[in-house]
Amino acid sequence: MIISKGTKKSKKDGKVSTSIIDIDFDNKYTIYVFQGRISKNDIIIKYAENKKRMRTPKHIHWAVDLLLKLQVKKELTREFINVIQQEWKNCRPLENNDYDTLTTLINHSVKETNIAKYQELNNYGEYDVAFLIVLMTLLMTQEKTNREDAYMFGDVLQELLKDKLDIFAIMSVAGFGGRF
Image 1 (cartoon, rainbow, N blue to C red):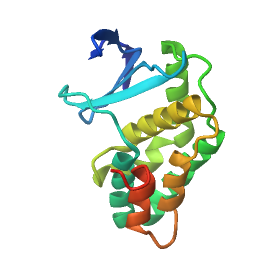
Image 2: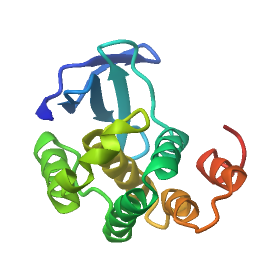
Image 3: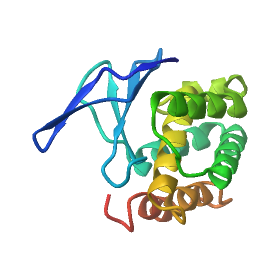
């Protein structure tokens, strides 16, 4: 993973903006973080595969990936989800969304998660563990920054941790009440 000052341009409503931070992963993905519009600390997260078109990540993307990992390595994936859930519980809104703040947030999350312990999960699903940790950290932080009492991210994790997985409940929670 390589973190660098933002260079990616994005155009929306005739306005061009440059990413605050770019995070490149060896496995082909790059995450871009832009200034959001909801508040001064809001962020917009985008990612691209091999420099293709940028996409906006949704909870459903990482939820499906974790479902695939759960099917093969249930206990290790559940342990990983528990670590992410603890980060969710400790997550606080951004007080600043500059390069240094975002870099510190990402580095702290990666260190706390102990990526090496979960490397085996890289063999399953679409995303590797490092990408998931960074993506999920940014998504949960974005959610809490925009609404401190947010719950959707946590609800998806809770559904994924149930002993008897209910694919329809997971998809409903991850897809905003069934709209996915």
